[in-house]
Length: 335
Image (tube, rainbow, N blue to C red; front, side, top):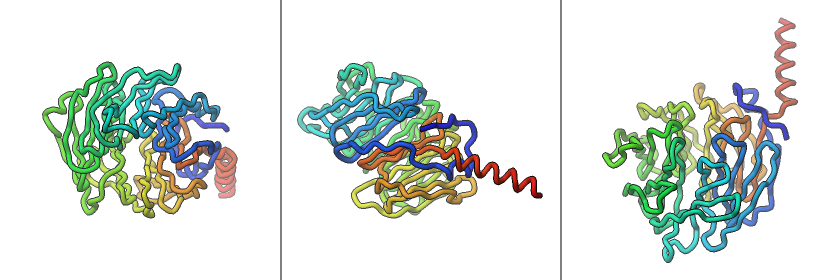
């Protein structure tokens, strides 16, 4: 499997994306995935209580750890390539150990974080320091520090919360009931939001929110499988896409690293890619894995990962790119 480094994406490259590797040995649904920001690593958390670490360049499984007592639900990397934060699925009422700071290197729990009483549905790490955030079905968002057991701050809100830091770590967004998105200064969040956006016409809960790398756009995915791109400064809706409904499964959408394209799963088992500027669909594929509930584009590669109970690595097809380039050259010469 050959993965291109990310230089400049275009419609032709995105259209050629196809499956380069498949991992089908999971004993249940994959609940979440995350790429390390600077290393070519991927981590997964799944219903079989496993946390798995992959090298995405060689498409190799590096390490598997099992967590039968707490389970493995939401997961994200810390800054260290062998350390992750993982949320628990079991015994939340009795132990309150909703989050764990894990070392994949020696399979140790470095710290427990107690607080949430219900399942965590959103988890993200600050790109600049040891802070991280979790959003739970207990209607709260908690701010934590890897170095301290106790919660550093709590935001109470209505509905299911989705949380995300911008790429500079200066701002974080919290999406909640009724399509409201609140923006906070991460250094003074206790003063309340400095801006609030409303996604008009859609009252479904937001199940995922992401910032583009340049910080100019936000990507929202709702529980009824609508995807929206918002201007991160003014809150205006740049574009929106409706996908097929999926029963008991939420989908995920992702920006490409240049912020020019969005890729998303759908309830009919297909994958779609859109050009944000032209608001047009430029690619569609059969996922071959059913509904892709997890989907993320790698930070520095021409590659994305889609997962259900099967994990797939999607890469650009060099042959198609070369063929299309040669065809264009031939057309130019004929003119």
